[in-house]
Length: 83
Image (cartoon, rainbow, N blue to C red; front, side, top):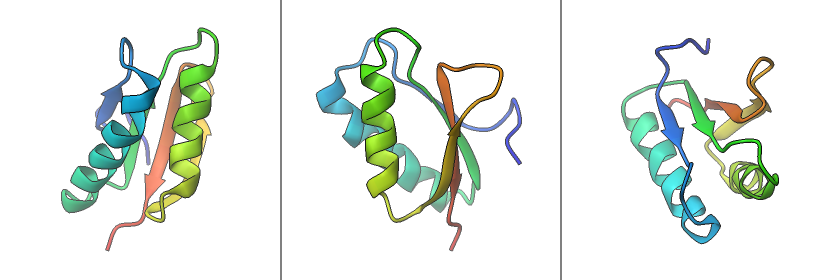
């Protein structure tokens, strides 16, 4: 279950071209630490970083599901496959 203490990656101020590397590294680190739920803060602005984030999550085989946080549309909650 996602909580306020779940690991969070903040992409504010990052380039979209770097986002895929940051997200995939963050996912790999959290799988090693056995964290099932993580959050990625991408912001609300133009939606460019949101689309890039979801594109990366959709193509990552270690992601079970992801969704926009219901109370913070600038954050995506991710459920990972824990091996």
